Image (cartoon, rainbow, N blue to C red; front, side, top):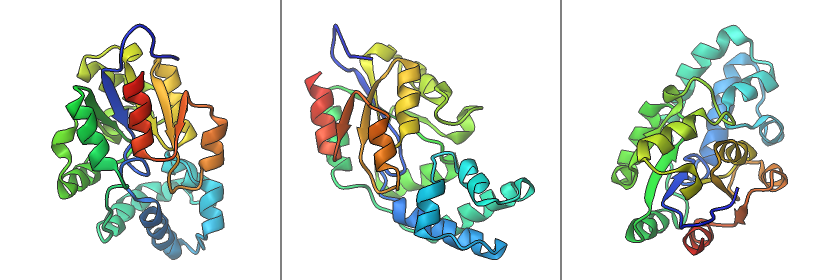
Length: 216
């Protein structure tokens, strides 16, 4: 997809690993989560099983399906002990888009209770005109349902929208939605897979991503 015939009017972001510096916290949470099940969750296992859809991680480490519900609840309890900050340049990127008259949205697989708590704690709730969380779509990334919901809420055509994410699933979701895809290299162990997904643009940081988008 290319942004032809007009400038980008809306930029939607992934949350974890893209705007939120949460890779290390996620690893620590998983490690604590899986210990009672007798699973040693090492960095190597994290790299092998990581996906934005955490049920793929559960499946990858062999957690019985009938324990997934309790694992979800325990993960949220464990995460409450963590304190994550924004990735470098995140606040400046959001401010620059706002100054340029570009709407911002958030599309994440994370639970609304957790994401809204993070947004409020970091003072960026008002930066987003639309926030779509895991409960808002029946299907997880890379299915395009959640991104399409956000675009509809923003009232901006897909052809005038972009999505910035740090995983190949983000790129696939954007492509399936007809949205310009920007891959952002982050802290999760999927950098090579992100490059192989061939986004329209690949950025090493958020400032680069915004430069690309405002130049379209």
